[in-house]
Image 1 (spheres, rainbow, N blue to C red):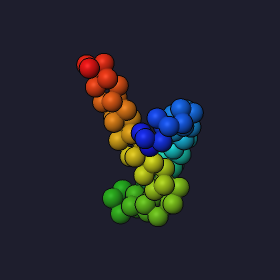
Image 2 (image 1 turned 135 degrees about the vertical axis):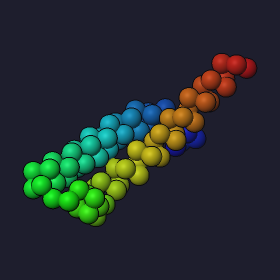
Image 3 (image 1 turned 30 degrees about the vertical axis):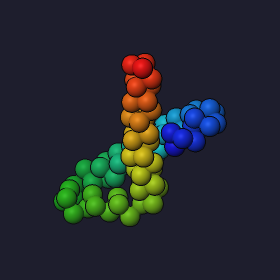
Length: 84
C-alpha cells in the first residue's frame, strides 16, 4: 500500500475512505451483535462467536488491520525523511 500510494498520490485518500467505511461496518456489526445478546439475555461467550461467520465483519476487520500497518509505515517513512 505504501509503495502504491507513493506512485499514485490519490490512493492515499481512497485508502482513508475505505478505512472509514470499514470501521463503520465493523463497529456497527459488533454493536448489533452485542445488543442482540444483551436484549435476548443469552450466554455472552457462546453467542458472540457467531459474529465471526459474518463475511462483512471479517473483511472490514482484515482491512482495518492492514490499514493500521500501512498508516504506521507511512508515519515512519515521514519521520525518517524529516531526520535526514
